[in-house]
Image 1 (cartoon, rainbow, N blue to C red):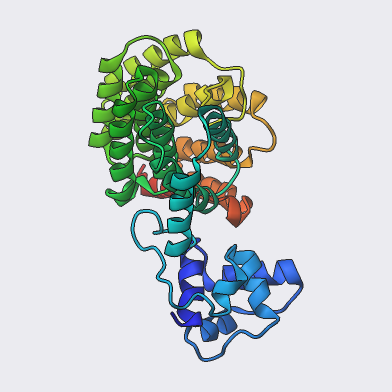
Image 2 (cartoon, one colour):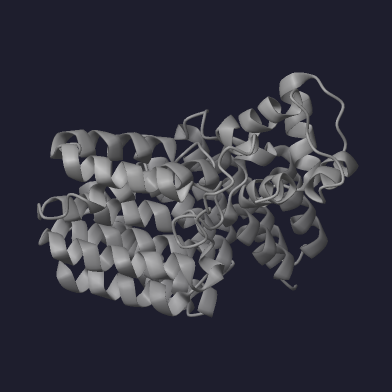
Length: 370
């Protein structure tokens, strides 16, 4: 693979423009690259020298050996484990898989600790960082699935992996959510079966994407168990958001109230984990739901409640709340003001903190008509 092509693949995998890559190198190493120079590298007009190769290795998070051409004979992943992320060398994944099979992998306690760490890191890290790391974990756990309880680990990892794809894709995210549900069924654990489906439903419903799948997964979760749980709470709000996007106001309101009652039983004291729904996160769900319903009073109250307890390091979620306020303004008739408000909030967030969900939310605000 030509070095220029590899640089381009790594850049686009992270969702970066040529200008963004130049800025990343400049910020990290005090250089003065511009977009045109990156373009010349990618078109193989110029080859990066011995100074810039380590710079690119650092900012693109790829082994220097690959950029130096020592890995040319190896193909890079283009399937579900490698698309949209910094590519992983196939031979490295094969080595990980066979090593796990030969020597054994983590035990259940170690996997639960890893999942807890990912649950926390997901709240602050970008999708590309999570996706790249989880793809390797999936290779490892795949070699241990003769142990039934590890299907639960695999299902939760698949759900996390799915969330790093845009729901609007219509294929990748949905494919992985469905696969996660099948894996959860193999575990025989109803808690996992409900949580995986509920988390998928709220992710898709919140994004306003693949609403039929969001509904189906939410319905499955609720049919498996009506016992209050974080998974059921996610399922209810996923279905509520799908109803709101469709304009079914009565159903959305009924589900919102149902969700509040479930939260009263299972609300979490853990503040910063994707596996938890604390008070502030419940209000993030309600904030967008009420904004979609045109209920300004409920939306603003939820935004204020969420801000009062939102951990300060979770800046991405603070941006969500500001963009919800923009949606409220557009729904009330101030289309230009609301759009500008949401755009300002998004632009204030550092680019590396942007998410696919935020981009979909911005598109929803811009589509709103008075």
